[in-house]
Amino acid sequence: MATEEKRAWIMVLVTLCSYAAYAAVVLGRAGSGPLAATPYRAALLWSVGLAIAASIVLHITVSLASKESGRRKDQRDREIHRFGEYVGQSFLVIGGVAALVLAMARADHFWIANAAYLAFVLSALLGSAAKIVAYRRGFGPW
Image (cartoon, rainbow, N blue to C red; front, side, top):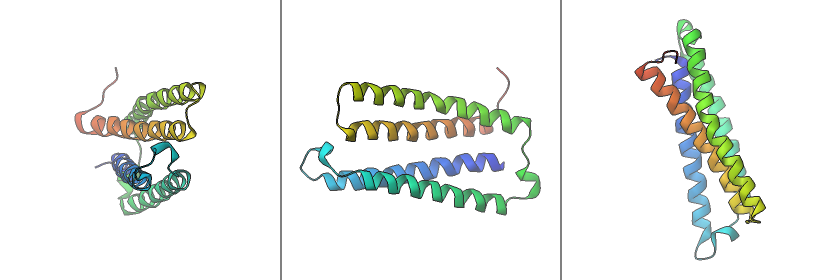
């Protein structure tokens, strides 16, 4: 397995775990009150911060554990990376538009922040999934 494919798997794993933990904390705090009144800021910041730290540590670990030949990027790796990033960017645009619409509708900050966070999560998942599929099923010029 190429190092870049391993990095895509790491991104999927870290993203799913961090968002699941965030959702569990926020939903656990909600109780019977309105969800928008739930304190979410600290959980969101910790979730994002720990996800970044875990991703860095796991990327370094995989890079150190990989053979020298597996660490080299060829043209195919660069094209797959670019393709995955382009695919993932679509959810950032959708999330930005959703956050903008929520702000114009004067929605609570809770919903705006969570729409933006969900867009980042979906972007990472979709981009990584596109990379994994490209590595597994093949990738050719369009």
